Length: 116
Image 1 (cartoon, rainbow, N blue to C red):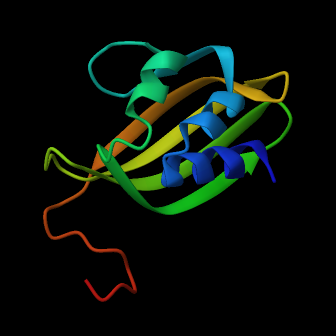
Image 2 (image 1 turned 90 degrees about the vertical axis):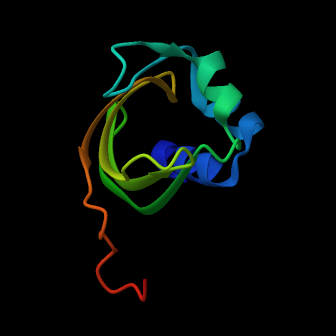
Image 3 (image 1 turned 120 degrees about the horizontal axis):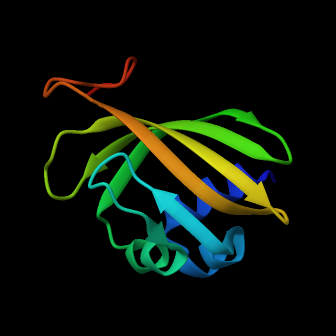
């Protein structure tokens, strides 16, 4: 299983132990909002909390050094859902940094081909 496939599976299942093994100890997460940088402990704390529900994961590119993935994210605080593009850097076979960019989706958004 690729690094990103394992990461996405751990996020979807809320498996903090699996995430802990995938994220480098020096991991940083730079989200597209709030002008902040989160650490590994921050990400592990919200794993499985239900704060974010995702759909339509796609790994766009991955090699031994970097990975790029796209997902639709829905938030428990009822803020606008977003299409999120994430860029990941790898070190020692683990994710050492993640940075995201996002586009807010309209209120009437539904995934093409869904019955919603």
